[in-house]
Amino acid sequence: MNCKQFNSIPLEEVLLSLGHLPTKQNEKEAWYLNPFANESQASFKINKSLNYWYLFSEGIGGTSTDFMKKYLNASVNEVLAWVEKQSFSSFQQQRISNQKAENLSKQYEIIEIKNVQHPSLLEYLRERKVGNQTQFLHEIHYRMKDKNYFGIGFKNDSGGYEIRNKYSKICLGKKDISTIQNGAESLRVFEGFFDFLSFKNVEKFLQKELSDYLILNSVSMISKIKNSIENYENIELYFDNDEAGDRGIEMIKNENKNVEDCRVLYSDFKDLNDWMIHKNPSLERQVKQRRR
Image (cartoon, rainbow, N blue to C red; front, side):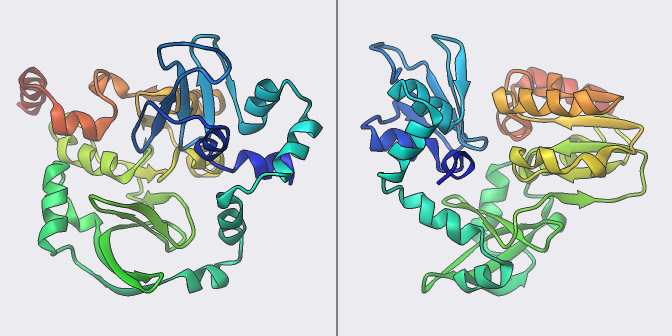
């Protein structure tokens, strides 16, 4: 076990092994009471996509290794010695995820790919306010661990599929970005495909011209897109309003010119799709006015 392997183990599992449970959580983050001191308010946050923690009461954060160094008041070698004695269930899953694609294919089987037509999936898209954007999506039926499942599929550049429905969020195949090329000189970058679909619904309203599009499918993919974005004259970023989004935008701005943070459009909401779902009447009027 080395630091890289340990840092890829979900922090939630590390905290659970120490007896700490979240006070609240969602698919993107989890909040805990301070594990280093007695506090009555949850000030310790885990960003699940980055697997990073941040303690607001002290203004510090980092990786799993950083956490255990502080928790045990120990050196890196002492932390790794402690890790070796643990039985983290996700470590075995990590080994599986690092196998070659031909071995991964044994973990699931795609049974059918077709246009989105199942009533529950169509209803889910309507709830997310993108029911009219099915041209970018597929209905995927697949088998995993001797059970059949289905979901909305969004294809990535490695031939894998981001799968979503009301109850699951997984990737079948290799994790990768998704690019949509229109031969444009401008590029718009989104964290997830629901944000991309949401933008397509207001693109004309905002008087935006057609561009190329890049969907990260995970903010952790930012480090892999340098060559994909460096030749564009203009880059618009539509990231989440959270620490991961802040960090991602900073990384891209540090390496590229003509980058615009477009989150002002939905500054009071979690992300672009959240704005689409919950935008208030005044925002709706703004969009309609821009359309005119």
